[in-house]
Length: 312
Length: 312
Image (tube, rainbow over all chains, first blue to last red; front, side, top):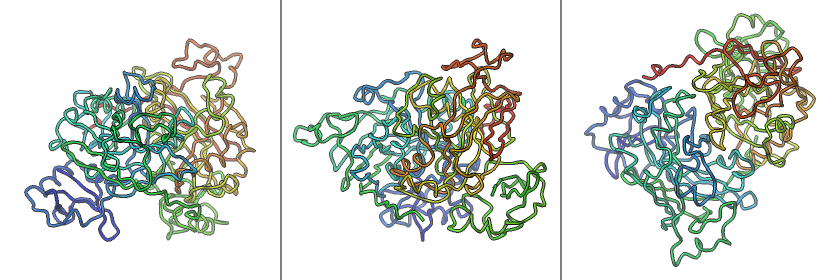
């Protein structure tokens, strides 16, 4: 099952995708269910009821006609893993503890949905604004002290995720802080795919394209700490909650293409980790994160439109 | 004005404190206002209407009769500063950048309200569970690119805060991650005090007592990066939102008392930073954070009651 959130008359509501082009509105087929995904996950039988109501349905609405939105409204926690792919550890020259997931937090305001614009900071603020193609994991039920072997039963589904990062701010101090939390600097989507449809994440791969050129590509079994171990670790101290998001970390950059001036030219790179094959995200770019068997998350990059006069 | 959140027939509602012993229910004096503090702050004139409705009122309810709750429901961000007091930087031996606030995030689930129990991890999970007495700052209106000299106008109020930390987990990796986000490991309260009543934070001091013994005490002007600079920095990349919380960092430990076996005995300390005068929080302790002119936040410490069977 693939669940989307989209705008309907100014409100964010839910749909279930039924074909490459069509979906059904949850309000049409399951009017008794909440219009918020986290509230559905908080019901013991929420996902099961949604599946039952939509099974075998023909979609009567066009995906192309709607504006997708992030499907998680104010989750308690949006975790992310640093340095979880060997290729990314190598290119940064940084160290991580091989026994524990390297965790930090982002806020809901740092993420937009599929097709929504990602904000590039103005050049006077920062220039090393980088994509990070990742697998996103959404928790489906509450849990503490979860053994590794039962951890995947707590997953509601998976999504593509761009953990967009502002490198100059990320290295102001040891803690990433604001550098991983710029307004609308990342994205996830286009939908939540349930595990029965996605299968074992370790058999999939993640890929990042900037303006059509592949910049990252790696099998998801290259993770240092996998999804199950991350969930089990978190549950030692924290009660996982329906709707919590975990961004599983990003792989390294691919080698530059022979005719790829940008990726070969380190003088066009800013920030602490100049890397052959890496290009920064800039206004006008189109960035895609693709996970095979799941889908493609596409976002245009625009200049951050915020002004001081946005205050009241 | 001192605003509390408390339980009324199972719901968290708001009150305004009118004397050391009494308060009025917001629903009684301002029935048109939302029952949620963040929703009040989101109104242009929310705080002003609350002040008008309660001014000169005699409280008809007893503070002693109600259970206080955290007054921020699901804010977008709960920021915290690491290494922001010179005395704490010295005792840890760690470094921080003197030009930028050293920021990380906590989740709402990591905080309880005044008088509610704080959960100590079981000894098999961790033993270095430490108090951090701090000033908490709550944002009152949205803002980007806020100049330092106008930053304090974005503050809705101040509170006492215990930024409880699990040291063994905090040092698993560079990012604090789970170590700063154990379930119910910290607290804030007892109320939000508005700036007109609190005055300049730099003229106040913070103090931590464990079982009646003073363990931390420092003037708030000993901060490396003050409230205004922290707000201004965040607003470079992030749109501050009503209800966002900023924990301003903790001072170092006081010297042990002459008759204080515990604080002199480093063999009773666990974790990475054994410090004369520091005691860990343990079940049965009573921990108080006091900020002069603001109030006292008191919490009992209990064993974390969570079980694997809390899952569904």
